[in-house]
Image (cartoon, rainbow, N blue to C red; front, side, top):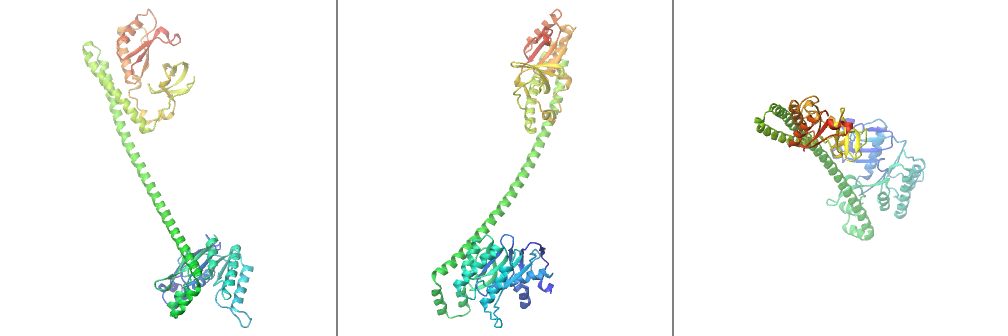
Length: 503
């Protein structure tokens, strides 16, 4: 039997909910002999709303849908598979109440209306939030005006009781309540106005029209009777029904547009995320290419400057002065390239040297000109003394930056432009004649220039002052030296000459 019904076992949950997807009435499948001839329906109760008010044409499928929900729920609770999609979900209900059909009894002196009231009274007295209530044509079988008022009061009470339920109706007052109450929802059995026949399809979100006169005409009732009925039904009643249907259709269209907007927004967000990932990947690849190119360029500059430095060191005689000057010009060009490389490297690595704003004695700082760290030992106006590996280096605030490990760890600064032995900031020539010391002084100054140092110390001692005089005369004639002077007595006084190299 389950195979003939194409039945599945839905998910069973403790909460009182009903979620049926592509469900069918099992007896209709059996009677018609073909499951494809039975129009499926889908609905949800207990999650966003608890009571569904179903309206629509007579013979349109309202009662069949109502019975199908009750029967399928009982089948699941009895352990039977149901003709519905396996994604369906049924909760556990403590009680299931149903008021469907004509239950009049001559033996018990019950009219149709009385039997309906008896059933509804039982629902109200015994119903709980874990009860399922199924009512067909609430408020019918009595005076329409009073029946509508009674039906409205019953729906309000069932809503307050928080039961799960489905109510079929033709009353506009119930459709209005379902539209206003957040715990209720309207649903319509659809009607094809062109064919003047029901489609047996359930549509949630808006109320249905009874189409009683259209169906009467379709079934062959005298057209004069139908025309007269339209006249008697009153323009106001027709307009109210049409308005409810129109509101429902507009609400459904708005919901569709919102869904489409949400779908497009989600797709757009996915595309933006994809583009951002691609852009990030491209930027990383581009960054790596630039890093590799700059690394190769720096390696070339290091080797080139080593060769130039060695060549200049070998040139000492005056007859080769012209050649030496040519090499020095090349060195200057290399220094310019080096500065450009440093700028590129800092841009790629994201390294930003923050200027030192509040220098304090004892603070560790970074000296930009010699690319190393030191400790401030003295501050006098615009002159700041920094201890660099035991040597005192005098500079200004503009040359200092806040010390950061990132500067040290920056991979582009792992290789110095020159070997450490070429980056000294102090030369001792004590006990030597000027002629003996001159080659050392020239090499020392060239190395300092290549290393980007802008200030060096030459320790010559005081003695007779002859060595100091010749050293300073040499510095005065050197176009690369901006100035020279003696440091304070505490830093060596006249026994030391500080030479400032031009930028």
